Length: 78
Image 1 (cartoon, rainbow, N blue to C red):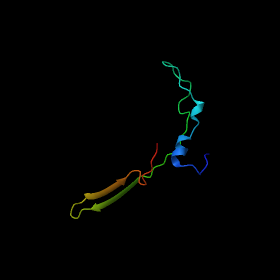
Image 2: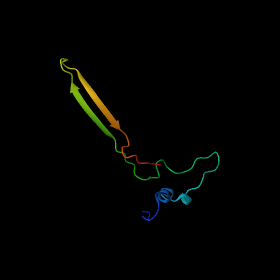
Image 3: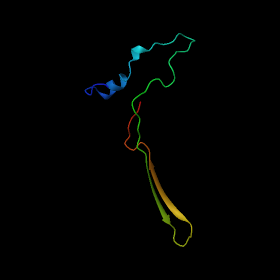
């Protein structure tokens, strides 16, 4: 866990130790497995509001008002 007195940018840059990795030689593949690094947790708040209104005189027909919000709190994920 990183100390809490760092700025958000410093925490993002120091999430894992980049000196533990090297570039593979040109034309070759590395030996690190898939999904070996876990980054900061991701969460987003999505909200949907719906209102159905029955139309008078029209049996089985209704009008729907819909509003959807994705990433409601505008969180940034790098």
